[in-house]
Amino acid sequence: MATASLIGLLLAFSMQGQLAVSTILSIVISGIFGYVIGRPFGLMGIMEALMAGFTGGMMGTMLGEMIPITQMMIMIAAMDLFYFFIAAVIITMIRREAPAQKEGLFSARRLPFALLTTLSICIIGGAALFDNVKAASNKTEKTVQIHNHNNHSIE
Image 1: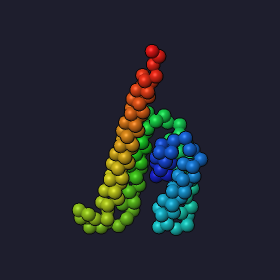
Image 2: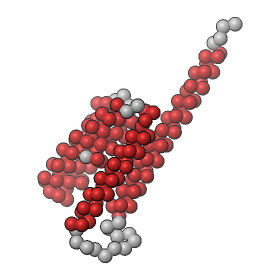
Image 3: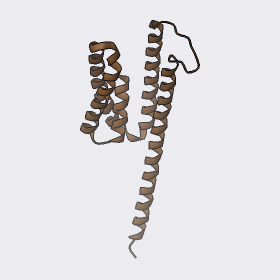
Image 4: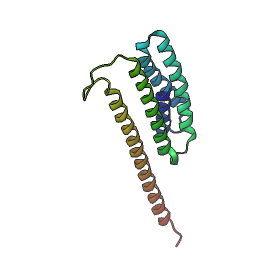
C-alpha cells in the first residue's frame, strides 16, 4: 500500500489536473507491483497485494491532486521517508523469520536495504530536479510576460 501511494503521488504530481488518467495509471502500475510482490506468498498474497495496491494507488493520486505544487517536494520527501520506514520494518520482520545465512558485503540479506536506500535517494533527487526545472520554467515565463508587457506601453 505504501508503494502504491507513492506511485500515485508521483503520477498525480507529474500529471497535475488529469485525475482520471493518473488514477487509472496508478492502479495499473500498482497492480503489477502487487502481483510481483504477492506472488511468492500464493493466491492470498497476490489478492492482498492487489487490493492494497488498488487502494493505495487511488489515495496517492487524490493526495497528489490536493497538495499545492509549492508543497510537492516536502510531501514527496515525507512519503518517501514513510515508505522507507515501513519497508525497513517489513524487511527486518522477514529477516527474523528466515533462517540465518552467512553475511557478506553483497549478501542477499543486505541487498533489500541497499535497493531501498538507492530508490529513496532517487525519488527525492528526482522530485527536487523536477521542482527546480518547473521553477526555472515559471521564472522564464514570468520574465517573458514582463518584457512583453513593457513593449505595449502607450506613448
